[in-house]
View 1 (tube, rainbow, N blue to C red):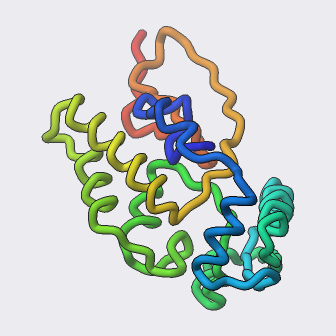
View 2: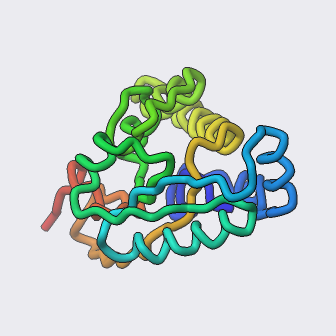
Length: 191
């Protein structure tokens, strides 16, 4: 199980990493209890760039194992297609800087269903509140991760590799695994 924060993130909660495991038998029972019939079609929207098609095929295979039929639709206009098509499942990269887009309750390319949980939104707000102590922020990140895993609006399937280099002359760089590269707004150099 992968949590919302990568192991390289300083706020990662290792204790939550094994909260759930892939259990097709249990998943089938839960789907049956929810009234979802075997063979039910689920529409997925996938960006047409690597590695998303590979990830989608893995998810498709796993959903087949529990009786769901995942229909893949690849697109080169992910944002527009997500808003127009309102798929039931998407495969995207998501790093902590984009969490607000996924957990705000507002429909967007990263929250096509308008998912909202006030407790998750509050935990995320508290985690990013600069007026809180480091311990309070860490506790809020832990709460966010636990709530997100329990509610399961997202299934964390992929953490992209990270290549980083450094020098003693560069300061303020926090390396967080992100598909968009490191955040450079705090970086400065010395002589």
